[in-house]
Image 1: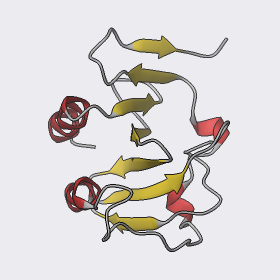
Image 2: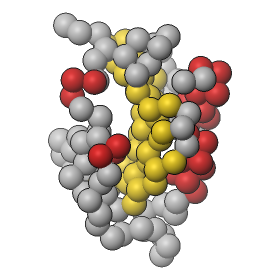
Image 3: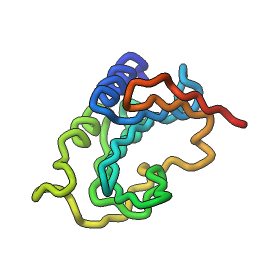
Image 4: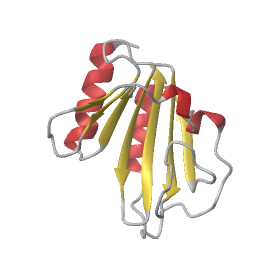
Amino acid sequence: MNHLSIDELLEELRRRRWVVYIFGPREEPEVCAAVFQWDTCADVLVLRGEERASAFRVTTVADTDVFQPALVSWQYHSTADWTLRAVLTIPPPGDAAAPIQLLQPHPDCVIPMEARQPVTILPANGAKADNQGDP
């Protein structure tokens, strides 16, 4: 991944109050993800490199694992920059143009449990990053 462009991308998401997850070593992340939680759903961005990214909207209830969605109401797969543009421009939930059709998620919407450690979480509120390594 081009760290400068990815860092800028992550900062823009945080500015817009997304929570950012960096999976793997922070200097060389394997996967970066970001989540914006609405009242009843979440928008999720998964970056696997500059040329491979996915975004989707998933309904959330108690204990929903947004990184392993069973169904999504919208999904987009392209380069990092185009995927970011797409996820930041979908209509908010409740809007007449908001996606509501349920779809099977593409395999790139999933981040396997074994790929989620170590993780650094950059909270939306700009609080100190939470480094969670293996216990």
